[in-house]
Length: 337
Image (cartoon, rainbow, N blue to C red; front, top):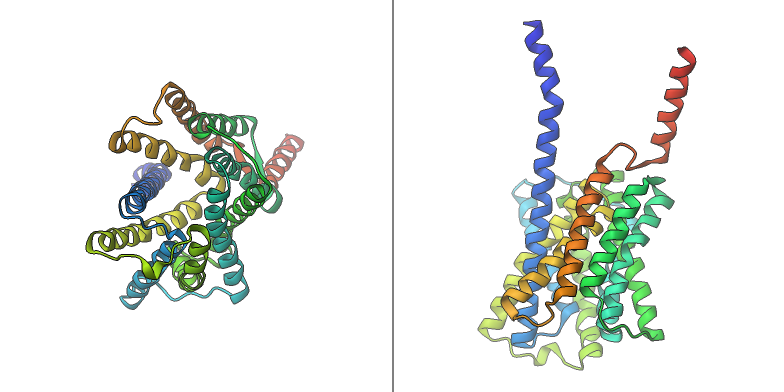
């Protein structure tokens, strides 16, 4: 009987590790599918039906998310939780500046510079983790991140033109997005919030603020008024589909960042960029697909695989306090010997 218990005990960590790996993969797949799906739907909505009100659409996304989380809370699937008002306001500030900054950056910058700005979120997120969480990266982890940046850059960066207003918008977009994603992980860890709880706390404030500011910002960016838009049946159906998928996109983002970190979310998240390029080639023709893009995709995928392997190894990515305690423990062991 004792030997059986020992065997069961030995098998327990392995089964837990397998379960965690399965949940991690499911979370990533959930995020990839919903993120790529919403990009394809929004692209069709804007190109086929002329709905160019991106900020207002994002407000509708969060309004739908608020409704869904409210229903789940009433059904008892989400437990009551509390997020201090100052923390909520900081999060909403970062998140909204991220959305507005990205939209303005896309308008004021060339596509090439916009993509470079998006790529710079990875080193900024690394800097935040080093500064606030005392994270230490191994040499292989750093090199794998550089390989991912190189590959995605080769895929997406074409024409690059720079101007003062565009640089300012890109700077605000990059730092606010990085801070928002870092804050997702920080708040879940500090207040022991689940992804659904945090989303339920933040979505109402984001919905209200974006729906209030969105129509004015969209008019400034596009010179089109949303109240003059022709909401016919097909366009309304696409808007509803976009809002539905957005609930999954928002939730999966919080799940992935909560389970991992903002840096891992950014690095492995570029798989979505590659999938969007491939699906765009399949559904919208061969334009933009050439040997350079394919070569960049291969480099990026190799970098992502390398990052996943390097960051999961002991010492690949850990807090400095942990590495110090490990070294102290080994020194104490040497003294005892």
